[in-house]
Image (cartoon, rainbow, N blue to C red):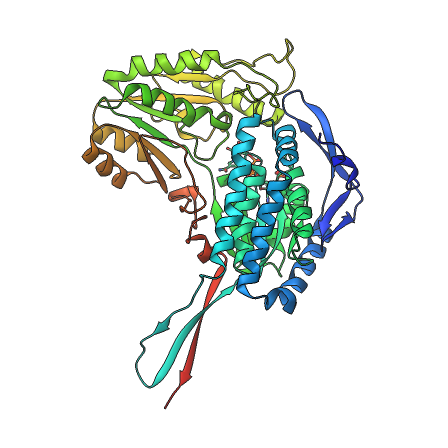
Length: 489
Ligand code: NDP
């Protein structure tokens, strides 16, 4: 870990009101380096009383004129300063992220850049959020105010820890809210750092608080807390449903970015080399641990053999390596639990009759069965109804499903409960747009896969969630509209 990192706070401390605060229980839980399974730090096990303390701090900060009445321009400057402060500490943050999550250095660098982008993008929005004047009947002035929602509970997963924090915290603060952030138990470290950095950059006390802890306790307490106005959640569809049920009790606003089983469709008129490279990245970026992972390769039967063979050739070259080594491309999965889950899906794939083309086993690291490594795995001849073509595996497992025409491709693509993203590979521009329109997904990539940008909306159709993060659309998640009537007669 970076020098000094573990000395900055006691293991049992949370970040509340711009201070390191000892968790009520005094308890901790461990976080491990996924590459070798070794303990890297103990982190405070926050519980309901800690959540309550953080929510009270966030509420007080929300009501404090220092934050509430801060000029929009000054809020923008503050967000920009946070971006600068993240940038100044980026080498350290990248290292912490690599250790905590196991992702390769190169991918952690991309996350960092995108997290900084998010703060800078929303810094620009603070002065551009306006209401309307509305031509109503009568001698009346009617106008709208766009106001913050209040205290936001943000709950994030482990696959892009700092980036997911930035995607929620940056727009929430830009809109004038205050935040209690609950990072995933597997990757709590960069969220704590982010809060400390924001405080050093001048964010007033209580505006951003971090409660580390388990989902069933800290996360659930945040969702149930009566003084939290909104929950912004990224994670599994299963937990998204639990959150909605709990949030119903106090009718909190909820936005959900959930799972996916995204189809990556390769037509027989595609540039095959580009489709091979793109389809490989679609599944293996972040080791398949992306909500948008192109985990279903829908491939035209005329090019299927060639395409699957070429992707498999690349997959066989992937070997475990030290995630801190800039040359490493493959990463471990996040935890033993996730490894067991993925190995279970691989067994199911074989049992249900799909053809295992490559992979399927644990991969050794430094010659031993240590850490959570799985060989990049490809199944061919997968049927649309197979479990591995329907359920989110969240690991390095590709399911190739063959189709014979465009209609069939669209039908198979839309035949899951999910609708987060989809890829289309074709050289026919009419087909590209025709198919894009018919796919039930919040993001469509044509002849590319995975690009995202702070300026472009992101979110799901169907059970992949609702609400759009990023872009101007995220402002709707973190503001509410007030209609003001003035009698002029
Ligand atoms: P979860 O949905 O369980 O976790 C996401 C976040 O929610 C974590 O911070 C978690 O805390 C928290 N959480 C868990 N239970 C509750 C609860 N009852 N109330 C409030 N918050 C809660 O995902 P997992 O980490 O368990 O991963 C399981 C599967 O979910 C993966 O295999 C993958 O399929 C999917 N997933 C999808 C993601 C996506 O972006 N679409 C991201 C991550 C996972 P804690 O970490 O303590 O459990």
